[in-house]
Image (cartoon, rainbow, N blue to C red; front, side):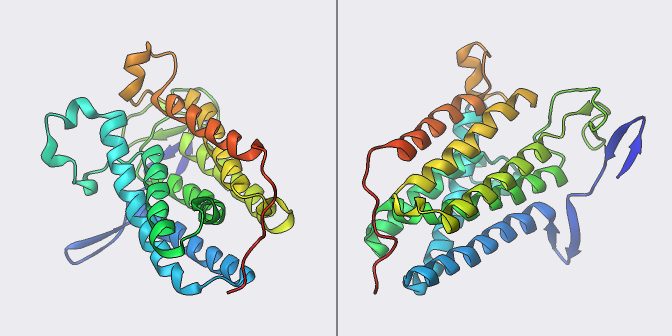
Length: 271
């Protein structure tokens, strides 16, 4: 990475090392790091609340599978159905790229609903309030992975902090991957403080709602600095991007859970 004509030239390799036929990539490493950090944090929450730690491995597996499947299907249906409707055999090819965070969020929620119904037998919101905190941090890591891949590009700009992604073109662009990564890191600190330092975690669904408002609220505004990624926006005259169209209902759901009239609930049951 070097500075040229006041811009930052970005030509980082997405690959870390080749191990025989396998390649270790930054995106995969950062993705895994985010989820492992999340597992550690949820374990601390379970210890503090006297919950069964044997559930943690299941939660981790459910979340990873739900995130990958949801993100892939989200990309297919929200952003590129015109292509995949004619190439159905390519839908499972996750390694070819193409993941959508809104789809990943839906996949995680569905996976945790299954966990809640068949394992914990507790309210879905009970586990969502916990995983919301580290999920924001995982989002920070994943966007850094996008930066290493030189993907999800910003609009052209003459700002002195613009990045030139030489693997793509020679156009100085907003480093929207960093904008999102930093916004998700800030969201993580807010959620972490709210969970551990306030009584809001006693209000079932509040922290999940706060997560939805922060993450998708930041996403809505950062979309103004992104290049068009196609998808649903073509059906709405291009006034808003696909990311913005999807973020609005997500944030609205968050507001509902933050401000619905509900009595505080116990932090945990002793088991």
